[in-house]
Image (cartoon, rainbow, N blue to C red; front, side):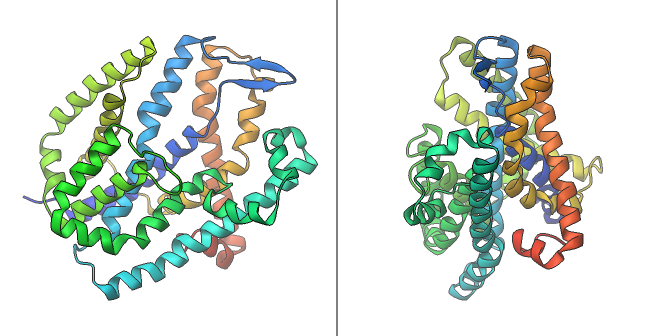
Length: 356
């Protein structure tokens, strides 16, 4: 038996928005917070919240980026064959879907930073030196080290797309050996985050590419062993949690937890769609890029000022950790639909054509 390609496609469609919610969760900064010179939520103030934050962001949320990279690698090489002509065609399409939105959103966020700094300085106090010392070189640098922080993912994806042909050449000849080497670097966080691109992007992208090119029924083999994979995941989760409590993170365990978490989430959604327990919502999935690009424009406001509105304790901290990404995503989705209705052509450019 083989994996049903339609169900796998529906799985990828379904999981896109939950993964974006996790990305927004990662950018929900609850501690420490400073307001009017007073520090709220110093690490250790609320141990239960500290654990919940680690669980939600590091153990669950951290699967979002490698999941997107894995899916991107898989889809780029879908079909298993990459010719010079198809490579050129794919790169041309990426100009529209990746490069143009990348430049536009970075420029928009630069304008936003300057406007906020001059109008509401307290909102962008950390960017004061950046604004005051801004030069043309700073402008150029903002596109290599994007000032809109989440755009590092798009930058890495653009670079990997440019390198797709040599990656294809390597994977066709020494694919398994190459993936094992990359896996070792990823699992031990070697060259994990280096200038421009690192293992956090290279390994999952190449792994997705390898699964697509080799046409091995690897995913189906994992689905058949769902219970075993889930058991291993729970064991690693317990070990990693104990490491957090003891203040001694075991890098290999945490990285393994992420890799298995990526596949376990995809496997679980695949099985649930196959059993008709879930169905993909393409309209919601298509809002993902806009949420990804736009959420940083105002999540800082929620991050910074929530202690002014609510009492600071364990319950409210946990509540806000969940509420801020949920509220942020809801606002972004609503704005996306409004913007698409008012200016469909411009919205299409901003999201790389993902507005249908």
